[in-house]
Amino acid sequence: MNLTDFSPAPNQGGHPELYETENRAVDPGNLVLDALAELAPWRGRTLVDLGCGSGFWLAAYADAAEVIGVEPDPELVPLAAARPGGARVLHGSAEHIPLPDASVDVVHARFAYFWPPRCEPGLREALRVLRPGGTLVVIDNDWRNGRFAELLRACAGSAAMGSGDRTDSWWAEHGAQRTEVRSEWAFESRADFEAVLRMEFPDGTADRWLEQHPEATGLSYGFVLFSVRKG
Ligand SMILES: C[S@@+](CC[C@H](N)C(=O)[O-])C[C@H]1O[C@@H](n2cnc3c(N)ncnc32)[C@H](O)[C@@H]1O
Image (cartoon, rainbow, N blue to C red; front, side):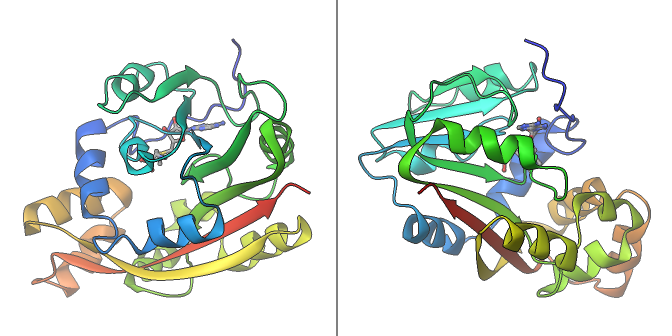
């Protein structure tokens, strides 16, 4: 399959073990999962984790009737498939989801593909595989709230992934509901925190922030969820 929209992720694709450390530190109170369940319950339903990477989050949906991971990076597909829990993992991408029309109830895309603008083909494809009444929820960074947002705004390279205003207006034009979740990253050690921050902001932004916060082992982190319901 020619996945022309595949854009390798430097964090998940380039450093799968360190990205695992990052995911373990994300949102220790599960506020994001609670908000996702509120927006689009998956219990007893079929859920797709689009751009599932190495599959860290697949186990979180254990009470779904079926969990399907979709991932374009051929190195990551087997890692996701090897996770306990029995999720089906397919090679595909946002613009090429290898599933029939109207076959799933919930699609999540967590920090994957949906960096507005230019996401129409993926949005069309997610809506194609959703059943009427089903919901796409995209998990993105909050560019305004939380200390992580300070780093995003300070890092020139992050601009490629969006900005608060541009992202918000694109989703508003596409009829999405916007939900903020104020959470945190909490690492077990300073060394892990430093390594993850340097992976995410390798241009010196992380070094400067870490110098200014010598005791920190985490930071406040704002998420924004954009949800679109298929009518
Ligand atoms: C930052 S990682 C997030 C992985 C996973 N969702 C998580 O939160 O652990 C971004 C993922 O999106 C995948 N990706 C890249 N291009 C994509 C596309 N066009 N459609 C779907 N996923 C894509 C990458 O291969 C990578 O696994």
